[in-house]
Image 1: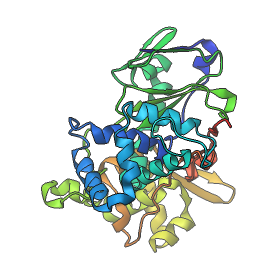
Image 2: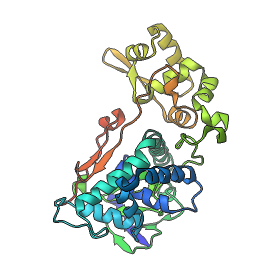
Image 3: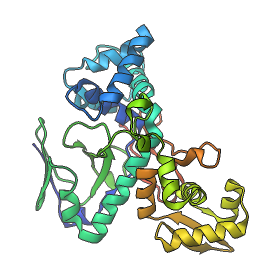
Image 4: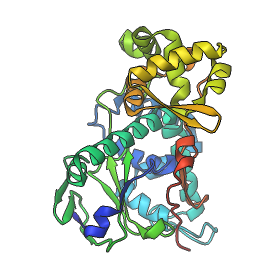
Length: 352
């Protein structure tokens, strides 16, 4: 059992931050790969194992990660602590150079996470919106009790079910909450990671949708219901093909002129469609100088998550979200989405 004792200043500084990044998700994915009882990851596990098998010796590092006795907790600890990547520095878990551990995690990222990252990020971003709605509407207590069955708030202590035992006191530094798709434990605590603003610890909590079809869609399509195979058609059937394309294009926010250029329609048509979406509560509109800027509301984002990946609606490739990259080699958590740029999150850096 892990305990986090939160004072009044800590509660005032609770923030819901960006997904921690592809490489940390790849470390958690080691446990998901080994957890053969998990039906949610069955399709994904079969795909990843096939890629590892076909890669031969090239992915030996990934195979070594899967054999680490302590799983993701041990790998994450060693990965975060390995500031020295020289050939003389050895990883404590694999008996290899630290640089080889970093390479193994990177290989795991490429084979297990990166092919699905756009959809995973979309889900985790909608999770952020959902938790923020809870915090704004129902308060911190309800938020903390909504993070999962293994996380309980008994003021002033937040309890996390875990095989490890730790008692953390942020002492006014606050707490960052970050969702994860692959985390198999009740929660993962990164206490005082160097480089985070105010030294706030991070609590990573698991969050998975009820249906995995939208996240791992490259499984044989014949076994997937038609509505799940072509979610863009479901959204188009609900709001119309053009408005579905408008809603998808507005995920990162843009002006009327940008939207007309993206979709190849007239500004008058854009104004008509955005007015309909705004009246339905799916987008909000504000004026920025001489421009009118539209952004998708939380309701609109939930609709996009559940019923649309509209890259085919306009005959274009959708500009999917990029990773919030947290890697030892890069030194921190760096979101690369327009929403993230508006509110820069803290940067996690490893100590030397």
